[in-house]
Length: 271
Image (cartoon, rainbow, N blue to C red; front, top):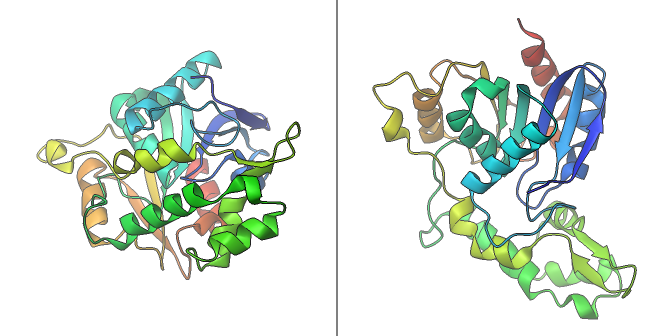
């Protein structure tokens, strides 16, 4: 799949992968800051942003999308930074193509599977609630983004989350109607695959995934990297560093941009 992307700066390649419901736009500020030292590629993953839609939304598929992108742009090896779903894509890529990563940064996601949607888990149920709300929004009756915000507020109480989601709602120039850039139906159907991950048991007793330098960054207030996830990280990446940014939630790069950038720049600048 030929992914849409944005490119900034010159130097050593740095590929940035956004999270679920996101796009390359969400990382433009970070990308611009890093473009002084790196050739930054900001990708739209499949079914997101301006990239093509597909009936498949698995990490194996997104891993191969990344490989194809690097091959197409003749990038033999790159630094890779991924947030949430993008971080999990990067982990799958590291497991399959470790020689193609110089340094790996995974932001606020563990490498293993999260509980399935049938279980009573706040993370899984939250995504089920969000995708149902997006699916149920009658875009034909929406005249303004404020209309959409009011409709989503009935099931998504957090304004910050709604504003993030509404960045995916765009007015079609030909019809004048609003439409989702997200492939809402497929993402909704593929939530179990999005909750999937690598099996740490397959790496126990071994050296884990090849020893490229690895940094995991977690938000202090986020539920995504707890004690279990840190154990999984140590199994798959025994030499990985895990850093916590204080008073940050899941969107750590947006909530605490300065300390986030400081960690990233220091890690990427190490020799």
